[in-house]
Length: 82
Image (cartoon, rainbow, N blue to C red; front, side, top):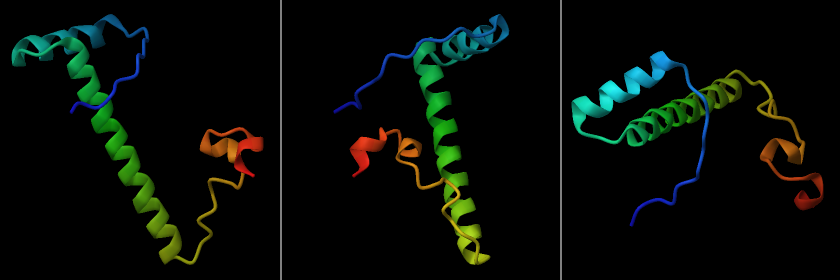
């Protein structure tokens, strides 16, 4: 079963579009599929960096609450966190 997709649109520079198009043509993929792969890889790297930073903070005895206690940081309105 495939993962549900979210619709996301953005303007990109023409040079970026050329790279997406060339990658898509070179590997027989849809340009949107290439963009999804790029964004997914970026998200994985960000998540990994977050985990590494958290471990380093804990290992050095630093507070790991640098995200802050605000419910808004979790993408939730304050009233939803109670």
